Length: 144
Image 1 (cartoon, helix red, strand yellow):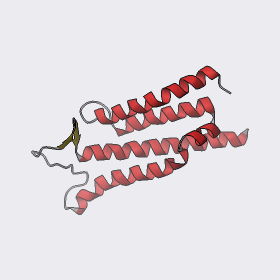
Image 2 (cartoon, rainbow, N blue to C red; image 1 turned 90 degrees about the horizontal axis):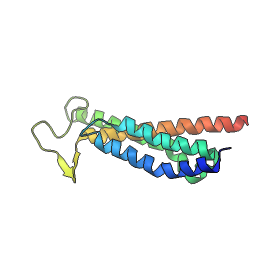
Image 3 (cartoon, rainbow, N blue to C red; image 1 turned 60 degrees about the vertical axis):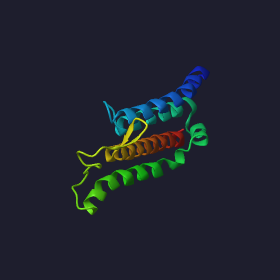
Image 4 (cartoon, helix red, strand yellow; image 1 turned 180 degrees about the vertical axis):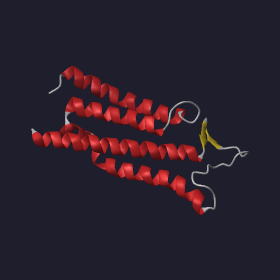
């Protein structure tokens, strides 16, 4: 069992951890960072919740049961970025817009296929890591 202080810190760090993960995901298009790193950071925030509160409390509080679906959705998005150019007669992972054309902007975020691919990788890593963490916690719970 963990202390009340550990639980307070874990509860207080979940939202900032998810915000940092989102910042890494967005910043990855202009500087160092990517979907994989963002997925790991977000999964570490969830892992901290498992360590502080235990599996039962986390499963009741967070939508952990959807983690495998999130991983599959991320895989589908990343695979679509790979396959769609092939279906259109291009090379695998060919990016849109093509060189020379300006990207579509939403605020300061450039909408290019690399963004979509990184979001897919983020969802895949987060879903897979949380699924593994939950499976390990469930196995430990059964042993006790």
